Image (cartoon, rainbow, N blue to C red; front, side, top):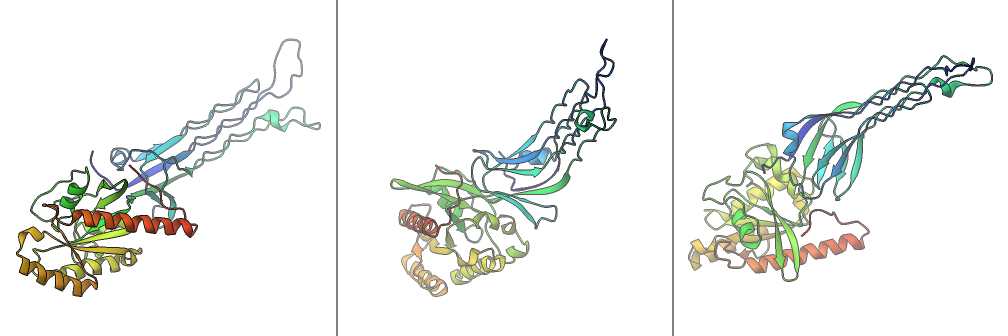
Length: 346
């Protein structure tokens, strides 16, 4: 299935049915009185989180969604049928914005969560509703209420416990494949990963969800490269794993490039707990590895992990560390009275 993380769609609720002007007419009943029924309620437009979805690809092929109109009222006090609702099925983590792509309407973070996007018009009253002691034969009925329509944006931000960041070709996809059942595309050239990937990582009896996004390059926060479209997918992560390739000539500069992009992007990414690892250590000798570990430690201010996603060296140490931090932060959220973000879980 192709991955799509944002879509612009048009929604319209149903207008209400008009009330009916009618009078009872039967043999031997000279003055039967009003019997016009009410119009039906127009259909609503909802967005609902559907378990198992992880992309908005369905909204690439259909962009217009219109609820049914309420049926007009009829004689003999018959009420018109309500219009059929439209329910937009979206993945966990979907945010819904107004057409300006800035005003947030809803943030759907739990399975089964539903939000009303456009309310259908009320059904109009038939003339039977207007009968009174002073007006026994009203010739009045209400039209149905109007519909609502607008363009909205659907934007998906994957929900994961930990996120992978780094320059292109830092080995992020290889690491994800080595610690989970995810099978992202892996190749020896930059921008192999063109869309985010999720994997469930086992850490003993525990597990957590790890997200891999396309590599970041200088200027990503301004729209350069692929990173800007996908930085939002790690906004909800509790901890970041920052991979730096040992094949970089200047590992400190590589680290600072990604950190600068996280800080410029904002949204709290710069303040998230970070684990730094020097990846692809199997490709260098011990002396070179020692020099680059020292340079990377000077840049990030903490001892980086030594890692080889290809051979498995150091990967489980990192897995257990990510799991520990994720659990601690989740517990702190609960103690603070903040309900942890719930997403797809194994």
